[in-house]
Length: 339
Image (cartoon, rainbow, N blue to C red):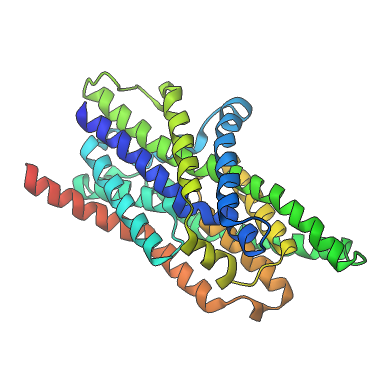
């Protein structure tokens, strides 16, 4: 029972870290365009992260992404030590990338850690390879979708606003950034909180097989307090901010105006809602980065700092195998020490 409680606590700590690690995704453009101060922006984003709980429960009527994440590893191979090793690896990876200011994916860190520990324990037969490959495909598809939507939306908005006075248009788009940032923050809450829910569900299912009191038969039996706690944790984490990554996302990729900020966040939000519908966990980091690139590319391709973009993509590709190897090492070391 103590191990299950420890896993739940660590999962919520990861969710909190995810909040401040990914806070930049929904507030970077609104801060870089000076619509809100960093403090105001993180409060704004945190509120809508929390609103996402009520949307998922009472409007969507379920937590499909959580179900997908919980099935990353074949149920018969899920054990509490495997989940613990995966979470420790995910927390470590997230803290290191946050410290270095690298906007890597918290989502793929968690999935990679979970899968890596399972492979170390039982081999590749322990993982649902089709699910992991689908998630891995969206490392590239999510930013590409965000980029295409942002590119097309930018051209459309520029056309309909071609006769607007520049100063008036800028003031309007500054106001609209509050709306677009809120939309993206809801998507962030919907997507990222459910990944931690999926890991906690997997732990509680494993607990049930061990005869523990907090165990559940399936994710459909997941108590409401788990979802509420996950959405609360990510909201509190977002309030803590993550200024190093805000700087990278908001200024280093391409210089962003209020108009471009609205378009990037709206395109990113639309992409997240699409993947929520498909029940595929994606990276909010990848999504908003693709959208920002799409916006920058409408000016000219040289407006995008491709050197920064290449560095980001390298970090994205390395996240799942990197966190997986770290989790495998943690599980192997623990097995030597405690068995």
